[in-house]
Image (tube, rainbow, N blue to C red; front, side, top):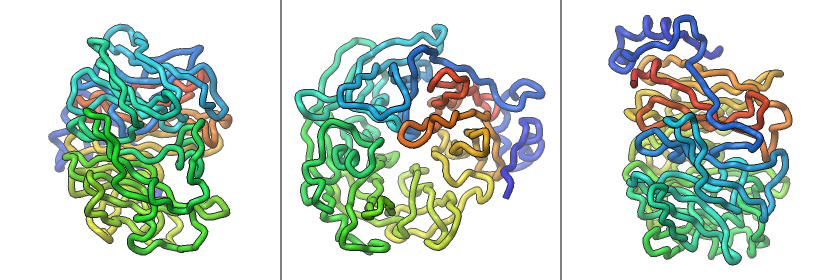
Length: 422
């Protein structure tokens, strides 16, 4: 089905009489404008990006926007490649403020840089020190910082706990999502007992393994099971209330292909649930503590992927959302209030156009936020996915893009005229 693209005027006309009227009362963007206002908030000659879509890029005031800075592109990072960590001040001519550096990063997810939930001015990111991966915690106002002797992936809503996979394992099976420099000591073991997911106490620094690859390889039914498949975890995310977390249990075949299951568990690794067990699951986001929006297939034999809302329960039923309208391959988040879904696309067509977009849940309508060209050189490990992130006040969306032929930079899209914020 062709994607539905509506101008602001058309969208209002079709939805003001419906359930979406309350959230569509904001000021429209400029008359005749195809897309909302956008500006590039970083500039060359160095390249800037943020990485994944499910991290807090904006501070609680929506004024400061986190990012990373690097001097090169178009190759894999090495262990001695150092990037700068910083933030953009949107109220001071988009001034770049350097905050630190990291040598534990990748192109897709950076160094897990993010604002610490539950704090006003504290950030966290991954780095390496004395032969191991660590995380840095910094108060950007006071300049006080400390080091936690473990890397992190997802941070709990209260900012006290993190969960993390084994980045050495990921680098071995999926370069571009782990960090180079420290080989997986158990790369020959298909499902080791002492590698998996770790819970990190961010106050004490203590790290405890809570779910092993050996355990998960024996949990439930694994589609297309073979004796020679290699197991690993990737993509972790706490629920909005911190009561559970999601991870993808993935396994790689000798030919390099892989399948995935969606797993949820309590922060101590107990009450493990195989939520999506068909082998086909990708990007996801919590809608609320009981529901997850994820990309999967309606059946294992289906040719196309879609976006499905599922309950956090074993063997959850797949209920498709926005079929034919909401892109089935993008990076999904809910804006505060859950009335809008923010998403994007991979490069499409000969022009390799990426299209971040909003989907209005009540009306089923989609509004595209822009068309961003991704040159062909941005492919594979060093591709630039837009990975749209929203500000806490729902006024802005920030994306990564090399659209203006200035290398990867941060682009800010003002969506206030669409969702009704000011």
